[in-house]
Length: 453
Ligand code: NAD
Image 1 (cartoon, rainbow, N blue to C red):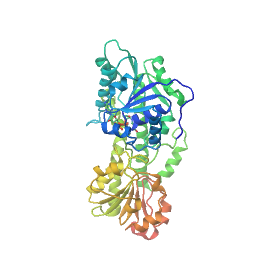
Image 2 (tube, helix red, strand yellow):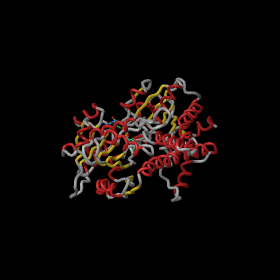
Image 3 (tube, helix red, strand yellow):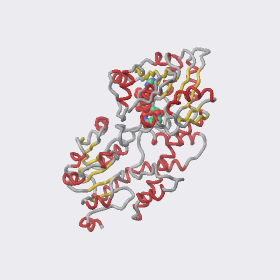
Image 4 (cartoon, rainbow, N blue to C red):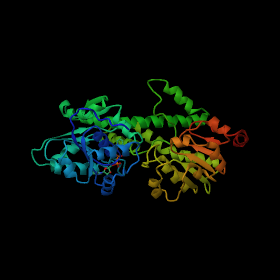
């Protein structure tokens, strides 16, 4: 990936708190734009690996960008927050905001970062909240920093929610649809406007609370689209319609559009599940009933159990069946397993007594510890060998390009459950598969179709 560094520009000293998905990508991109960036994390092992030149997460283009900027001395890694804060003008908080036990957002990491900033702050700083945080967290960060800072120190707290998607994070950060800056005034937003100016992307300045809500509203809306089309897919299954055609018919309407209307196993990952729960929680706390969002979450929760019930019915039970599962990551081009529907699926299959042979192009090292009862295979074909059925759980490109005749030849029984609708039913039928997908009529060669009726 070429450097996007502009020819002439004032560089800024930036601190990014977190070397996680968002933190590392943010740090690498700001360094690539010509700024001096210190990336700080409490995870000593992670920082140690980064210092040795190893990038701990799989993200296309990231390793190259990190090593280029480390070599050029614009990007450094440390566990020393004091040092990182003191040498920076702009401090990004990009730490995790996982869900707590009741769906509320656990702000522990954000609070710790704010305390650390407060203790280290040595002059005027712009503190930027990039983590996804419930409305009001900007105020909380301000209070915490104030409480720990020496008297008389001035600082600003700005909200700058992150919209990158894992798997295309570098590109999304270099070329975002929009940059949202929530600040007390335009002059406060100015530092960030300048920092982002080289990207030449649309920037929206709002108040802090609105910026915080924009992030949750965006994710909840995306989740709603997924659950909506999944509910339509269920109806299609009942009446013998084809949800693929329905999506096309919907998508031509410019008010609707075809993006993010993919029927399947539902949404997973580190953001949509926890952010929808968190928004629901915030709404409830503020006395706003949000039944629509409750339904979105409920539909999504039922996706995998419903899919497994269909498998059970079609296979006459799962006990002692060998099931190949292709894909473990929550989506393609990442090794992230957080809230991955594939992991939930494997868990349910094992619970029902199936023997699971799994394959994922990059997520297997991360998956092994949490799916100990599964057998991990070196390729899709090895997973398919002697299987009674095969499930496509993550839509990796590799699975779209499989040699299906070879796949069929190694399976004990040519039955495919496509949880991501990546193949065409008619083609699968012609190849001799019994093929089940989501919201589309099942397909089978004539000889088997007779038995299925
Ligand atoms: P992550 O879990 O990958 O990374 C968090 C990192 O923060 C970890 O490396 C952890 O060690 C570090 N950390 C925790 N406390 C710290 C502290 N006090 N000081 C320094 N480092 C600390 O998380 P992520 O996926 O990058 O998400 C970060 C935030 O961005 C979350 O709020 C998330 O909702 C949001 N977000 C994530 C994505 C995504 O695709 N992952 C996209 C948009 C927004």
